[in-house]
Length: 398
Ligand SMILES: Cc1ncc(COP(=O)(O)O)c(C=O)c1O
Image 1 (tube, rainbow, N blue to C red):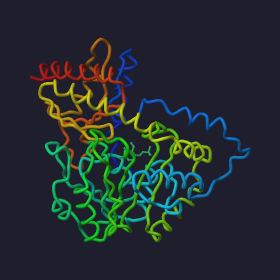
Image 2: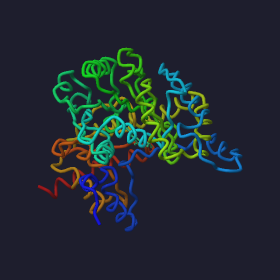
Image 3: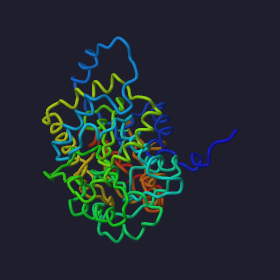
Image 4: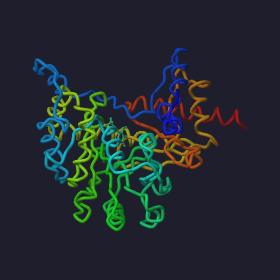
C-alpha cells in the first residue's frame, strides 16, 4: 500500500512539532507554558453556552451546503461594521478558516500552480498547498522592517504564468504585522495588472493595537472580482473548537465552483452554525474588551523581550504573535533543550521554531514564533525562563 508523495513531502506542523518533548517534560512533573500555539485562553462568551442549551431541534439533519441563512446574514451584517460589503448570498460557511483555504486552493489552482505569500507565513498554508499539489512561492519580508511589505517589485518578480493568487493574513500570523493601506494598494495593483486572485485571510481582523485603523482591501473597486475573503470565529470569540469560518467573494463564477466542494462535504454542524449566529449578535464592546486584553499582553511581552540580551524583536501591531530572533545558531535545538534539559523552579516554556514559517528554512534558523495567548503573569514567568535559559544554554555551548 502506498502513501501519496504530496503528503510524504509535507512537513509536520511547525506549531506542534515539539509536542512529544513537551509531553516528556510534563510526564516528569514540569509545568510547560504553551507559547507555541494560537489557542486563546480567554473564556468563550457565556452567550455561546446559553445558545447551546437553547438549541431545540428534535432531529439534527444536514443543513444547506452553503450554510444556514441566519448565519450568512449574521456574517454579512458583522462585516458591514468594517465597511466590508458582502450580501448573504456572496458568503459560504465553512469548517473554520482552514476548510475555506483548502476549498479556495482546490478551486483556483491546478496541480503545479503557484500562490505567492509574504514570508514568513502561517505554516498551515504550506500544508494545505502541498496537499492540493500547489506550490507556495514566498516573497521575503524582514524583521528589521517589522515584516512590512517594502515594494511592488519584490512581488512582481516572483510572478509566473502559473501564479494564481496572492495570499496573506492581515493582521498576520506569525508576524503580527498589520498592513497599511499603501501595502494593500500594492497587492491590489499587482493582482489587477496580473489578473490573479487576492486571498485576504482576516481571522484576526479586530485584534489591531495602538489605535491603528484597520484598513480594508475590500474598498478597492478595481479588484472587486479578484478578492476572496477568508474569515473565522475561532480567535475573536475564543471558539477554536466550534469550527466556524467562511468564504466571501463577489465573483459569482468562482463561488459557483467552490459550492461544489461544499456540497461534497454536505453540511457544516447545525448546532455550531446556530451558536455562531448568536455570537455574531454580541455587541462590539465584547470584541473591544478582548482586543484590550491582547494589547496589554503585547505590551508586556515587548517590554520583557527588550530586557533580554541578544534578542532582536519589534512591536507587532496586531493578532497575538511575533517572530523573535534569538542569540543562538539553531532555535529549534534551543527550543528542544528548553523542554528536555532545562527548567526554572520546575517550569519551562514551549515555543514554535520559526523555520517552519519560512520556505527557505535557513532564514528562520535562529528565530522563534511566540504566541502570547497566556496571562500577563504567565508571560512574565515564560520570558524569565527564556532569559535564564539563554544564559545557561549559551554558557554550555561556548
Ligand atoms: C492566519 C490563520 N488563518 C487561518 C487559520 C485557521 O483557523 P480556523 O480553522 O480555526 O478558523 C488560522 C489558525 O490559527 C490562522 O492563524
